[in-house]
Length: 256
Image 1: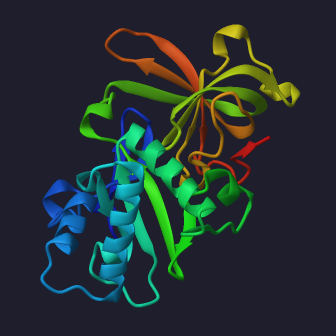
Image 2: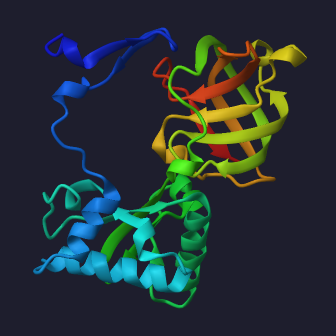
């Protein structure tokens, strides 16, 4: 209402989305660049120094290059305080898995500790404590890992569904949106019974807390919106279930 320029009707999703007009964007804070600014700074405050030490520790333990780390959140904007957390990103699918394994080893060795506030935290294991400071790490695709372009697909919501399934591929479950390739679709109510041609091949979460909550071979319980996806150039059609459509509060992915 007050900022109509920031509401954009997406013809491919057939709905309004929040989007900043390109001419209005004055600066983009890129996580890798913001970390390099900390790395090269002549003077660093306590949190910046701790963040640098933490990333150097993780880089050394995981074998992931220091160039493949970044920072986000308040420290990236230089708006942090002494109470702020350490928020880092890891560039690349394989790098993230290496960091994940390194964090697990460091927890076993007593250098770090996990912090779990709920069952999703326990499944994701993305949050912990380093020298009495909370840290969180997330994954960002490298440019070569971006495989789709805006306008390549058209999306149409069909109906809400609830089901259980098995994770067939978790390669893109660490990113946002999180994509779980699935199999063994089992409906949990009559409305969710589908003809074979409409059985979804993936679950896509727009909600960050459902990233990396299940691994390949694991089972999940899902409530979301069945969506028809059409590849515009070829006319190929497939189906997926989206969690985080804002159509219902009962949308989730729970590891079983």
